[in-house]
Image 1 (cartoon, one colour):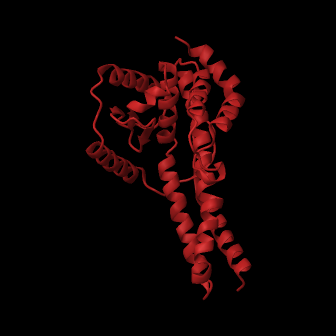
Image 2: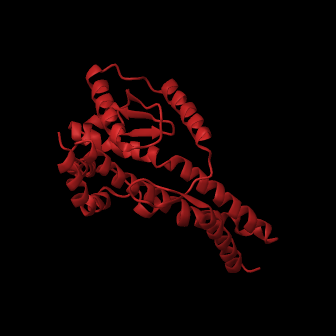
Image 3: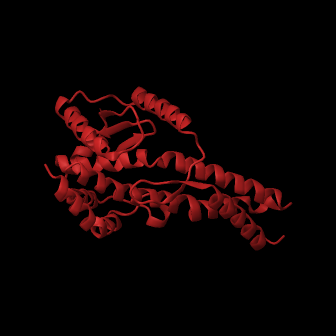
Length: 256
């Protein structure tokens, strides 16, 4: 079998396996999802990951920041209409501008995020984005894609005696063609779901645009977007501007 036919066979097997098992639907966007991981297993993995994070990163003792994150998080969760997670919100003493949400509802915000999210509404954009990841089960979806990808690679490898010769090329092509673009799709989806959640909670969704403008001004070295798991700030802003009329309509009905 030629290398070209080998790659085509692998791609076909992978595409068919994914299309036949896309059996979940993301909130707000309605996108079809492949989720193979049982929810209870995902929640257990999330709890374990959170324990590891807490063992390595100190929790902030800043009462003001902790109260703000808790307040914002509870408002977002109330309108998210997601799974019945036992949500918790923790501020970590870490100067990198980052946040996360794990399966099961463990949400963390680094103190460094407050250098970028300078208002409560901008913080709401951050937390709503992370809650969107959890409600849409993006972690389980990514892992399910990896499971399907490895299955496709295994089938393709068995189809040819020269699999070893092409395995590295195939893995690289699969990473660039499936894994990374897919995670960028999830990031864009979490942006969209997040602004809808914050609008439902009575936060001005335009703060999400301001947040990413703040990130863009920070600059720094970034990989080319096609090699990154995150859209560039400029592309995020353009996408948010496209969906902003819908979010503003919801916000005007729910402002406090």
